[in-house]
Image (cartoon, rainbow, N blue to C red; front, side, top):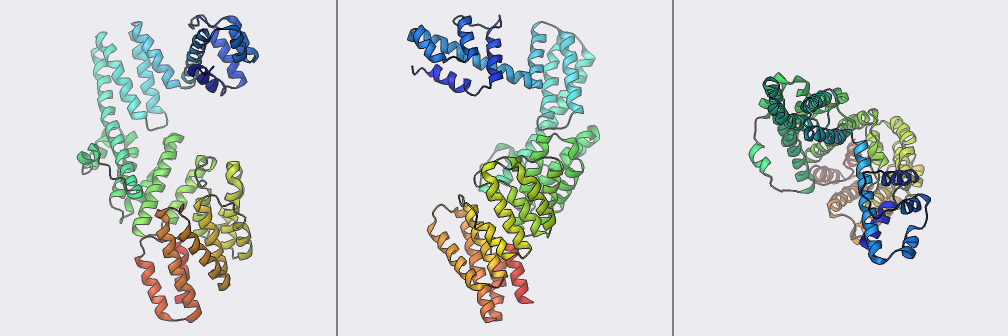
Length: 474
């Protein structure tokens, strides 16, 4: 039987745990669940783990099977919806208030909305807080009007109006920051109406108004407005540093989810500033990453994405700041939470970088050559760590061999992203000049290298190259 309902039912049913399957059967036995074709026998068969489809084929016609699977699928979807409602407190309360409204229980409805707003105001802030407060206040207004509660209506209307205003600007500024980041990173030039009307708006006036009436929310707007100012004036990092400082100082005001989002926004803005201005902001990035770990936020390490996750970035940034002890402790502690499929490669890369920093060049090469090269980032690390190790240890012959292999790889590998190709080619070009200078000692080569380095818009391993040029100059 190839019924769409049967396929859908078994696909969803197969995701249930043993305890959930028992709960589903208990759900089917509830008296208010419509199940005209689901007899107790069918429910017993589901509960016992019998081959349900084989039993159905012996017992029912194809038409009856279609009807049974239709009801089973509908009931299973209801069951999953109920489970979600039971775990989502806000949704459960919303449905309860709907019942109060339908049953004309005005006093209970008003009291519930007031309690909900009070709870939202006292809870950790998240992206939906302002919206949920204005929504609850708005939904309460008709009940207050019908009951003739004029004074309470005016108070609730003020709550709705004020939080509607704050929510609008909160969502607006958050969206404009994200839009700017997407434009810079992904060349996304999509025009949105909000941006056209409000990009030049004097947001400091909004902040002043919020601070005077709702000072408990002013810190949120202060962070966002400073971040917005930072992405629109990348050369001046004062606003970014202030946004980072205010956020970390007040991070306990926010829910873990929103806190995590803010950390990612700070990292994105910091990376954007560094790329556009060529300023070394590793110290800022390291401060943000450490604060995120101190907050217990490690989803970016537990999750897997194409090519890996952010584990490598923590180690690399720490080593750039000579924090090799911190990097070693990080590797030991946090490698345990890495997804199994990423752990070995992440450890080999991390220990290669660590040994390179500590001038254990043979060990650095040993670890990096263990990489299972699946994605381009593995190839980048595979070649460049060897280049660094051989160059710094004075083994120029091996360095030249790896440089040539890396160059050939860039030319023949069509899967290597174009966005990274120029930066890699510029790296090899300057590396080639450094080697020629080592061999000849001609000052003209070094002068040309400094010029190439300063004018290169896209350049990988900029810090390492800068160190080698400075060493050559001294």
